[in-house]
Image 1: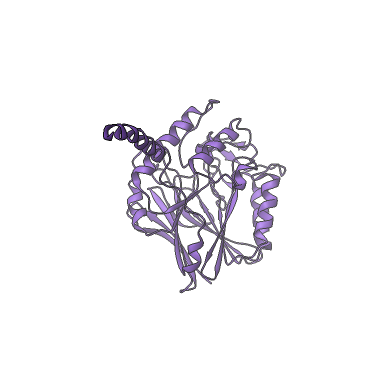
Image 2 (image 1 turned 120 degrees about the vertical axis):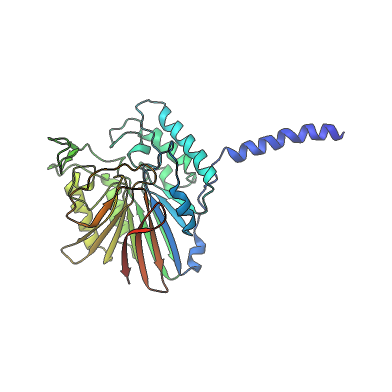
Length: 351
């Protein structure tokens, strides 16, 4: 009888193990109700994580005692023109194993950019965007009742109550609805590296439904407001992918910000394989700051670029960002850090 019990239980044990390791161990812990009991939180963010390369920067990130981390695009590199999305599926499988091995000690929220969308610089004409969306939802274990499962695109809002302060984070989808960009008439030339600013005011970055959503959300009250855009919003000095490719859409966002109740808006962005800090004062006296963090492990040396709205230099070595909200000190800070966790650039906002 003892041998028979052992024989029966062993397959059950194996099944349990298979079930355990068939899911990533980096599930988000939601809701974040415990933040309401805190007066200080730290949120990390980064982009451009190549699944086939080492990831030593996470040693520093794990030591930073983060409460949450935002993966803001190119979370895998799986560009594919195959209907079965073979390359993207393989990229996600490798990344799942990477995350499991690293045993990260924080929850994750994510939005995509072009390389986890499926096409380099891809927009709404990518034919397999619905299938790539399904892979994203599965990989990041998005709940079955989440709005992202029932509407086009992946844009969403995260609201965190930190003590008595309300933090609103808007994750924008700059892929699903975006019209085609105007190709450069002189590829590689400074300011025209790949694209030109479009004169056509009918072209859209976010699409009507997402724009309506942004307008509604920006009318709500918030003590702190962060907008996550996978591509850069403020920079106007280069011709790579940026909101300035569609300048009418960039202006539209600035107009919404000027009508909002926020005096200082923070954008965080990635994509560029260089990090940096940018700032704009609007006509109505609002401040828009942007910290670009890129890349986590896909850096390569390249020359500095023009940056009319940039503060200081850009950094092409591996980097990540940290947002700290401290209600006791009545301040919010955004820093850019290198692979050792050393500060490269910083921004301080006092309430």
